[in-house]
Length: 177
Image 1 (spheres, rainbow, N blue to C red):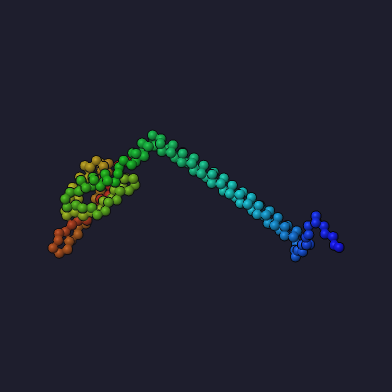
Image 2: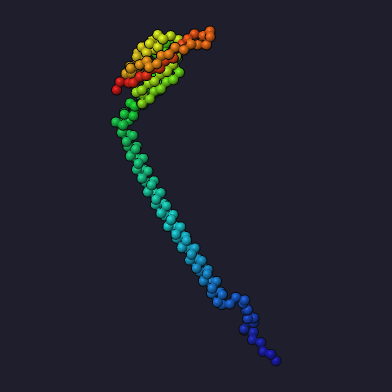
């Protein structure tokens, strides 16, 4: 008769195709891979921290510059100086030129440079005397009281057949400083 031990489980021996040494090598590779991955993450974190510090420093420096500029701009003396430089708008010049030009005079080029200190006017007139009248009218305009206008060029042009002649002129001026 055969005896069977019911307290002992019946198991078949496990036959593995992977040897113990191969299993150790795979676990070692896995551990090395995880270590490399951890180190890569630490390096990336270090770069991110350096970038953050650099950006924070630049932002702080820019904020300081902005604060200094705001303090300078909000200074009453600077505001008054800026306002005095900007008081003469271009439209003021245009309005004065329109009031000064007599009938028969038209401008073709207006150049106001060097913060309004240099004025160059080019245009046409029906009569040469109208150019002198235009210069006299300019001197009466408030914006042009500090200017001395000189007639730099005055040429007579013949119109097409059946049309009248006209004069081409150039006025140059400098403001008295």
